[in-house]
Amino acid sequence: MEAVRFEALGVSEDILSSLHRMEYVEPTQVQALTIGPFLEGKDLLVKAPTGTGKTAAFGMPVIQKLDPSLSAIQALILCPTRELAQQIAAVLRELARSRPGIRIATVYGGENIEKQFASLRKKPQIVVATPGRLLDHMSRRTVRFDHVNTVVLDEADRMLDMGFRNDLRKILTATPIERQTVLFSATLPQEIILLAGDYQKNAEEITVEQQSSVVETVRQYYIAVETGGKDRALLGLMKENQLTLVFVNMKHRADKIAMQLSRRGIRAAALHGDMKQSQRNRVMQQYRDGSLDVLVATDVAARGIDVKNIDVVINYDIPLDNDSYVHRIGRTGRAQQEGLAYTILFYDEADRMRDIIKKLRVEILPVEGTLPIPEKAAVAPRGQSFHSINKRKRRPFGIRR
Image (cartoon, rainbow, N blue to C red):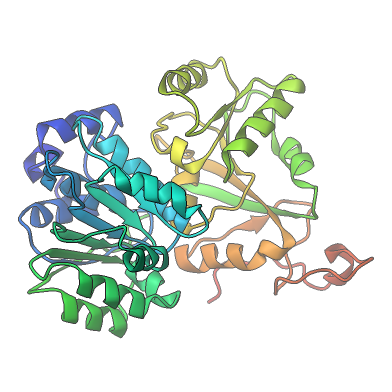
């Protein structure tokens, strides 16, 4: 499709200022097709593959439509996992930086509910939630939907796969009838069509076809290790004079690995959400100007990274969702150059790796000299290693045809 600019889509000046800060140059296809109708208030049923910029596609219009003077929930965003909820909230906060007075709360399982009570008492205008925990808050009457005018379901197909069908229906029924309802889904099975039919009005369907993905320009490998073997594998993958980006799933691990590498004489630093913005800016500048060779980052902190000459991306922790995998390895292989990405995983994470391959339709090969992961994830019997019980399974795994 013909290139457009964010201004032409009706994006407001304050959000354009945030986009400039985030180094967003032009909209992706899903953003170009979605933002205009979203701002017009239409119900939308959007089919878009992973890694196409969906969060910003709904984030920009959600924030633009808010009334900062109204201290009540106006937008509700539902997603399947706590990790995705955290990532969505992080992107929304970046988009809202030029709109003072906007508060965003995250509500998900696995976190102390008292902390969420405190966040909700601040009267956020946006709540990003997983269905189960939101229902818990609904039963406790700690959330009110009287002023909700926009509901977004992100990764709707995945939420149905995870058994949230009835939860979603209860939540949607509890919101005002006169609301805008937008569904994003990688696939459109019959269940999604039925859900849309029950809770949307004259929905406009938008389909974004899988384009030539950034992952196709990146050579991808994995190395499977026993418990305790990740540090050794990480050091083995590093080469002198390579600009390396290492991804982890937890903030404290970023600090730990950066410190371990520094002690070995490697110029490394951590980047995560607990750091002050001034600290993050300083680390990024050092990384850009070559004062650092290795950056160890979490997914949320890395959303704004735009360094064009990264030689290799290493997933020290396997990503928790497929969008994160695409965003991670997309940091290498830019400027029409071939990139290189490695994922270090434990043997019992084989199923997670296979899901990435199946959903993204990519080929990921074992690092030369290492054995492939087993066909089925398992726990090796005591006294045996996977090297001994999987000698016959030496073929790499990839797209199953």
